[in-house]
Image 1: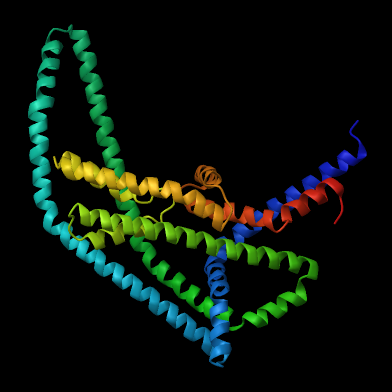
Image 2: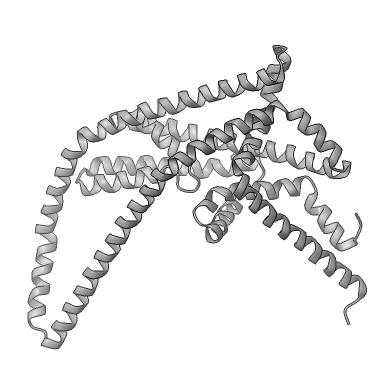
Length: 372
């Protein structure tokens, strides 16, 4: 028979697990249908210190301070997007100018490779094929036909998926604009009435719960800021190294390419490889072996630099081992797909916040001792 105190612990554990499960279900439903306002709340939370500073420094009304802050941030974002678009346009013009010639070189190299390597192999295989029995020849032909059919089917599926995705993206643009509009309005109204909402929150929520939530919010916000600061430092170092490396190996539009690679470097767990690997493969098949070796060396320097600095920066800024980030990314990817890769760092940092603020210890103490 199970002792009474053990049964009590099991019941309390079940109670906590049920509460966490219901909270996750509630939050998932809430975020699904009100996510523009959740994003607006997060933006208002991040901008609140700046809005308060402008309000107090310039003695402005809260509404005007919120409007001015949003206008400044929107102007900076639009300027940044315009600069990125102009740099991207220059890169596209560069690609449009040079890709046709490089593509012709690639086709010529491919033709030479086929004539010198593939055709002799094909001729030897053909000679061996002619000496096979008719049943063996029939089996090989069927296998080849099946392989060709599979390649054609896979190619058609890839093209179909591409056009479906492109169609969904185009259809989703009006929805994206409307969501952005609601986020902007929501951010303004939440920021404008921040202290009114805060007073209402203090009246409704018990003091003990408020203290815990305030501690978690402050710690999580500080952890997020430190995480993005660490990523920004890593990206700036990588971008600088790439820019210097491209200048040394005399690649045109070094600054534009370094800037584009730096933007891509923000993508978790993919980073610069998303740009460098296709570039290296293209140069290799194009027969430009000198540039291939130089790009490989530059890519290796960037990877080694990031692998050496990332653990130290993450540990010093947020106290999280990158291994836990990687494990969380894989688990999140298995559960919710590609989006999970982007959510994983937030999940790890939130769990780190719960640990730092004593919430996990509080829950364990409640389960084990039964004391509030």
